[in-house]
Length: 145
Image (cartoon, rainbow, N blue to C red; front, side, top):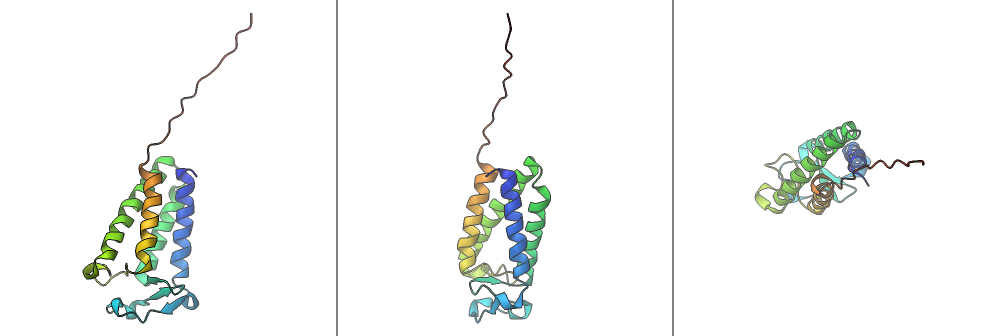
């Protein structure tokens, strides 16, 4: 998979996650004491696993739109992957610290979100930071006697 394709696929995935997070039938009530007052912000668990709320869904939509917009340009797709890698790595660390695993009461980062964010950070890091193989084009011209 190429960096541009990665940006498009990840962007579509983020858009899907953001949209699905607003579908009431797919978001179950959290019943989670770690929600810390987030219940009023449409807090729940997408597919019964991933803690989400309205702001979380909007962030997914923003990353999704960004990925879809930049996929045609390699440099922009690479920057997108780099930002996703760093941002989601930070979210993994925050999700592991109980005092800030709701990003100060704004976005749930705990539970299954931690491993999902870690997978996204690693994948994005690969496409954003691994050196690009450069292929020099050589022109071979045949000489006729």
